[in-house]
Amino acid sequence: MTYGNPHLRMRWQDLSPRLLREDISEIVERLRLIYPDLVLFGRGLHLHGIREPRYETVPVKFYANHSDYVDNPWLDDGLSPYGLALRVPWPEDIVDGDPERLIGGRQRRAYEDDRATYRRFGRVVYLGSGMSEEIVYANKSVIAGISGVTESDIPDIRYFRHSTSQESIEFLFDADDSDLLAFIRNVRHCMHGLTTSVGAVYDVLTGEPIHAFPTRPASLRWHRQCAIEDHLYLGPNGFTGRRVEFIGPNPRLLKKWREEVGLPYGRKADPKSIKTLGGLALRQETSSANTRRLPDAIGPTW
Image 1 (cartoon, rainbow, N blue to C red):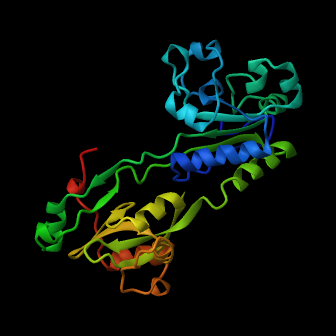
Image 2 (image 1 turned 45 degrees about the vertical axis):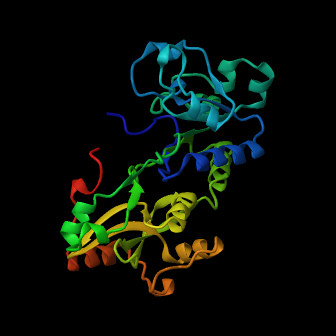
Image 3 (image 1 turned 60 degrees about the vertical axis):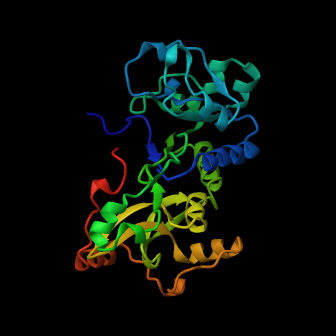
């Protein structure tokens, strides 16, 4: 089995953030400001993971923007786009105008293509469509059974059903090509200010934050929505004794965002007093507190 490319220093990275569709759209438009000739097309024309000869001949479909892709992503013959590809054509591709030149060709072979082929595919990033924003209600009977309170005393607790899903932001490139490295830096720059890397655990009955923790980069828009809507959380966490815990935004951000829209902070704990636990400290905390996983019945059947 091949684990590298014999022709070059290949890098295949996926940032895997948790982003909403609005975030992905903003990244695309920010990148278009840097590269006005940016083209959007189905990732499956480059990479699709199955042996399907129709991907070699299906007409190239260009999308006007990210929303255009989300609204109708399918290629001819019902072929899946397998995500979105963003490519900055080389000047000679633009002069030629051939759609095949504009996308850089088809059927990438990451572990076999030589340096010239990597250069031909060029400046490309592969994106997903954004996380599902489906919100569901937590099962009050489960919370009542754990906490020992009556269901009538439990607020309507809501959370994002697919809170653990991740988005794909992939780079496949020659690590010795300075133009490709510059492009990747610009894509990363276009993500600045859109994510946070800190979440927090909350007691769902009192709304009090328990501790914060480092997390995979996630949408600030997503966290802000949870901050300004009462009893809305990112997702379930677990339970410690009779305390049911859900995940929410960093308390400092929660306080800031609520005050910005004229809402009270609504918690007794000073956000500055909430510790951020990571790595060994977080494992020790959850182990010593005997934090356990919530039953699947806490939400809808997946």
